[in-house]
Image 1 (spheres, rainbow, N blue to C red):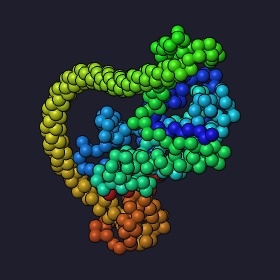
Image 2: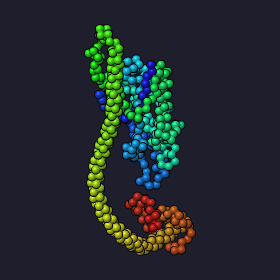
Image 3: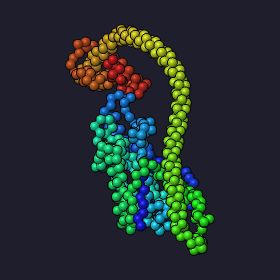
Image 4: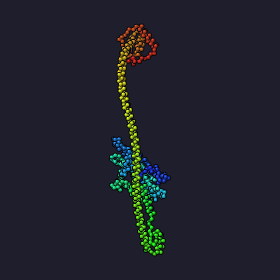
Length: 493
């Protein structure tokens, strides 16, 4: 006998799937047996899927208010996902092979192990088979009644010409994978994709020796938990139906329908009214059938009403949950608004203070600029005055120095002339010493000029007494001070 296949959408409670919190139907001792295939934060998955598309979109925008970010794109989807026609932040698929009667983990562990390997093989190639369904969380639960797989994924549609080139779109993702949507509700891409995946699971199950008796059941878009609740309610109603007993039917001759066959036979033999007994039994059977039909009809009506009530109750609970979420969001928004308002007042006050400080600094800066300009003018005036004074004081000194240098050169030239022309060797030696001493006090080029033996224009007549006086002065000066070469540059200036 084949096993059933369940392939429906889940609630998308990732924290429960990852056992961050545990409900009553979970065996805590078997949590360690769960198999985790993918565990990636939703924000990281969105960055991986859409960060490049957001960056390319922002490169084409010149206004900052039109630019997007991955978190803001996620917020856009969150705001619109309450609309049934809008895209959801992510989707979940719940896959199970077998049920609690033929594949219970505790009641039938061998069959449950087979189902586990079927689901593991199916999940192994899921991402490769569905490249546009980015799986960010996938876990195989072995801590409940039957093995089942939770697959949470983000549909990535590509090829848009305007806006983001890659977006969260289930229809576009199916189209990118070659699954075209039809024009009718029962011929959309989701149904075609589910049929394809069911066939794949059936193939994998067959390779493990498991036959799938029914590939998919149309359940009016119920979630797996809602479907389990409906099945449980139906079983209870059927049990109540079996417990209902028809009204007691009295047969002729004081016979009761509940008596056993031996008693009835003995009674018939004793009374010998076989014909009347058959007629009575036929009437009783008709009454019993009518009563059972009436009970079945009432119980079916009751079952339908209970399903309707459950559906209405689920809608009411969902609406209440949405209202509570919206109320909580509105409360948080009100708090954020008050905080932002206070922050705005504080920033505005700081801005006024900064403007006052800026005005004060600008005035001080203007005053300093004016003061600096005045000081520059005074400095220029002082520099000009000092330069004029220095020029007036230096020029006469330069003239005096040039005259002294000219006289000094003339004197050295005179000694050079005497050093060559005098007949007295002693006088010639004195003249040479005087020439050498005088030339040492001059610049090299002027010293060469002074040593030139040309007859100076103002040659004085020296006698022997003059040479004796010059020799004594030279000896006295050499004895008093160390011979040191004067600063020719200072002498030039």
